[in-house]
Image 1 (cartoon, rainbow, N blue to C red):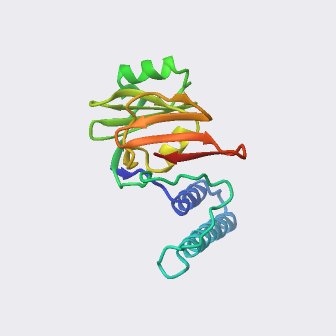
Image 2: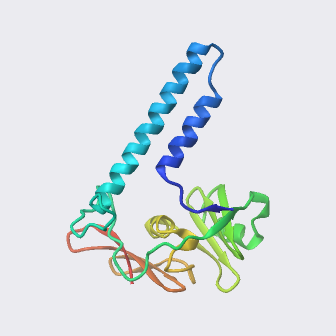
Image 3: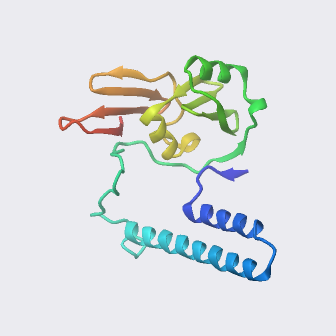
Length: 197
């Protein structure tokens, strides 16, 4: 079992471990590789610590005046929080037929990964995801609605699981979920953003 979220620090540590495992023959090269890997891990840890301090004003409290980082999308609304969900990986051969049929119909491309939590499953393809549950069936999630849902917890997203595919609305698109809706719409200034409704 594993958590659905992986931090940059974990990724840096994993990368450093791979670098150490691939280290060459001589002890000088090994020592250089160890130093390089250690520097990379320390740098990533420092960046993560700085990001946490920035987000919490350094005292563990949420910042009231924090500005969104560059490229961050507006995901204000009642839902969109993340609940920790224990998941397990799903091999391509274990993906149910109805999921692959939905992926094929939506032209999502090749299988990339899959995970499940209980009877609920999310399968990532080159061009989107298919989410399957016993209560709602299998539905594609694509584009920025899919990105928003995935970034905000995927199977652990408080908005829940999709109940239908994406539909076009005035100024953008929306998709319904068990606990709400995610919209990707354009404001009067022409900027697109995600919001939970």
